[in-house]
Length: 149
Image (cartoon, rainbow, N blue to C red; front, side):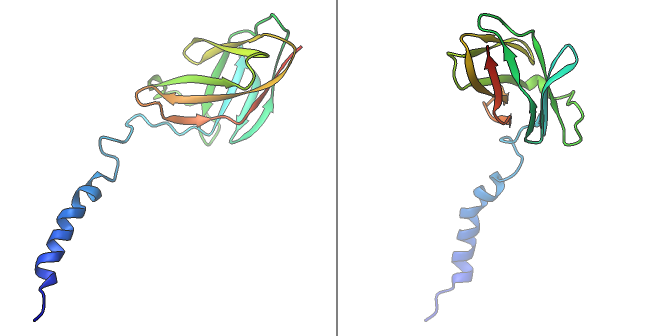
């Protein structure tokens, strides 16, 4: 006596796996406003202070204890180094300062912020571009040096 697997088991297997196959893709769980960031430029009135070129950082933040930097502009760039100008309205700028006893970060507007020197020393900051709807990070910078004199 043989069991007709093809007749009963195969359709049951297909029906069982169908929801998983259908849910994989860019359906309602995907972002319609994805941006593909490959770097970032922090500038002071158009003059670059720090540049992340696909993971290679040049520059650093330096300030005195008790002082603040000017409001820096944070520009995110694509793989060609061109500024990303659309789709960023669904994102927010966040920063994590390693030692907030040395310096702190203040966001002042969309993609503008400054640093405040608390006490002499050195620390690092990591900048993130975060999707506001779900908290996904679409860009995380390498550690950027911050020195307070």
